[in-house]
Length: 425
Ligand SMILES: *Cc1c(COP(=O)(O)O)cnc(C)c1O
Image (cartoon, rainbow, N blue to C red; front, side):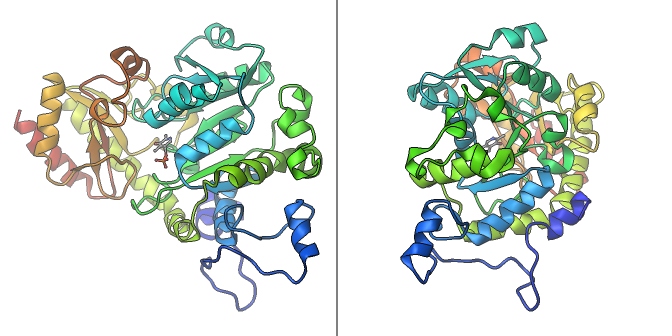
């Protein structure tokens, strides 16, 4: 199954003779075994199989396998949310006393997770401008740095990350690059092809695409050689006493170690599990992801072009616009399209932004993006309201920024709605 469209539709699950055509929802917390010995082997990770749905569930595993195939990875896991995916992806290799380099252009929830909550857990983050020079990027590393983190297309700043620049710096310092690929989706960018090592997703966004299920995913490329930097990654390269002395890289290889450890330790202890029902909804979304992304991008492009010509619009950010600061990077990393999210500001600043949003009829105000239905948000008042002015600026967010997520409607209707709302100014 070589082409990505076919993987969207049929990847991850291959029914045998007479089995259900659609992925079955295995709505069971537990699984039955004949002997305690059988069960013991599962607990010791000596045999593979299901025993408790907090750790693994067949429905979730099938859907994770589909996303793994879409990204071109070796192993993947579903989680309860994108936040859980971001947390696990870093905490799996960094703990108290460690340090992480991150792009400053981040989703607000991720910024808070890193700068506040994980800081309280003893992990220090250095935030770098995604457009920094190689020298500036290299200067951010410390002897205790364990990972580099960034977003392919940052939410909501819409900066496009130079993935190769970040991958080269990470690898020069013996650590992996973790990429949050939520906005691009593997349809428009596969970060592993540009040197990234781990990919995370908020599947709540385009992958689900219908606003029905919160979820997350982590995919491992299997390409990062933990053993070459064993002193930095003892959790993967030395025996885990909570699993009878298993060493993850030895037992599961470079392709399986990261996800097995995240499942066996972090999922066991934190329980950020996705429900089989949610995984089923996610799979329905994935079946049309390739078709929907094309339309989201078309609508985003048309709306961005309309806004950029409107006299009451102060500025528009959309990496698909030729005049955009990130157009060249988008052409390199996202040649088939970027996403359906457009950021813009109206003349008259914050108050004018609020007035325009209030006047919209078709486009709803929601804390959401990447839905089939168009929606918009004022980040300075919502997702990023914990940040001070300086932090907002570093994240690429101005007070007048409206984040507009173009859905799957006819783009002319979206343009008409925006036009009548802008007329109220
Ligand atoms: C929404 C989002 C998240 C968080 O995902 P949840 O599913 O809401 O927990 C992380 N990263 C990006 C880029 C997002 O857009």
